[in-house]
Image (cartoon, rainbow, N blue to C red; front, side, top):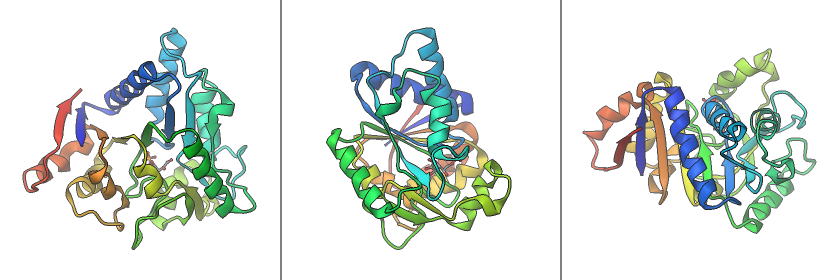
Length: 257
Ligand code: F6R
């Protein structure tokens, strides 16, 4: 595990974008796993800027969205598809047909999830999976549970998660109660994980995830055993890691950007 400390959200995003750009240079047809929400937003803007400057092309890149709200059509402003369309597809040459999503309105959600796993496998797996962490330790929409889920599935959203995401909707009641998400197993099979963490409110859960026990009650803790996980953290989110680091036997590689 490599932990890259950065000054602030802007620098965290630049550092993350650089990692993705390096991979695209090495493998122009790479497969990128896309997270949504606040954590990766500026990273996508950095990629868009590079594209607009003419120094980056995502034309051959394939992408898989990490998750989607169940019951929201693709056209809904708060669907994760819409987010990716707005922030990446329309801002770069990433081809819409190369962006794979879980369809929130699928009649048979289980079948949709199964087909999603197959599509990932057909493209040879994910090269870099972007992740954010929820306040309850979720990654994707894998909420705290008594087991780690293996494959893509339908999940019930925790109240804390719905409340955190309510800012994007006009009322809490509008936030869907269910979502479809890649499983922990799907995420762990990615060649590399890139976890972005920003803000003081994420500091405690991040330290628990990286230095606490590996436990499905804190799904993000699984990244401890991924063979190639990079965590890009800004200074406020780094605070508790600094303390935990001296009280735990685990040793990670720390770098600054
Ligand atoms: C989003 C996702 C979630 C978020 C997490 C953090 O696709 O899968 O796990 O990464 O809820 O959200 P932000 O970044 O908005 O704090």
